Length: 273
Image (tube, rainbow, N blue to C red):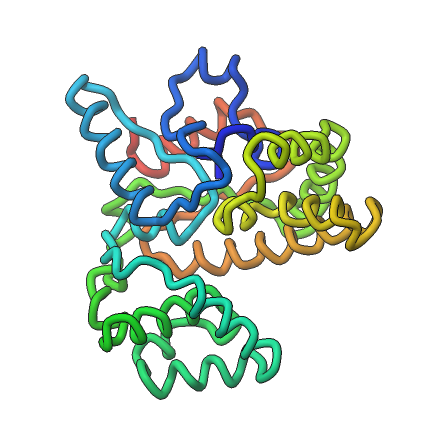
């Protein structure tokens, strides 16, 4: 989400001082009223990496979006462009029939994908249904490489993991911080400058909820609690994803952390330089 201009507070985007100390890439490259697909991200990332390698520079990927990490590690068939009308139709059906019926529908057309996609992973189920509708082929036939993992000792992929109770506490503190820092005012400025945020931009936890608050759907206190709840849910989803990736090695965190010490421990763990 750091690709979006103006979405600074809710994404914990690196500050100008951070960027002066260490060059960051793929930050502030897209207006928030634009869609930004995983295929576009991969193309931009590959182009950036090629340029940096040509200059003799090493590249460090940082973030918490497991689907994008998986695509970076294994490659991914871009597939057809999104059919937003179909997606909206399926979401309406979902409200009427429920998650189990949606997953069963996928089992009927693509049992291999259904066996690998969790019944509660609505986003991936809808995408699999969409690809089948648009191409007539199961998405599992197009993403064989995507499902073949690499051994952890062949990669340098590290997941920094807090104990769950600490993670929840940090999330709650972080949510209060973004509201104190002015995320409501930030969203107001974004809407005034760009108009409605894109579907992709609104997937950033905190932004859609603030938009709904500004539309009068709930009060500020309810909005803050909803952002906490959805961030807890997102974090749990992230942990599940990372644990499913064979490339990842977990580095447990505890207490007050010293970034330099953590970096040294990871170097020792992975033989990185």
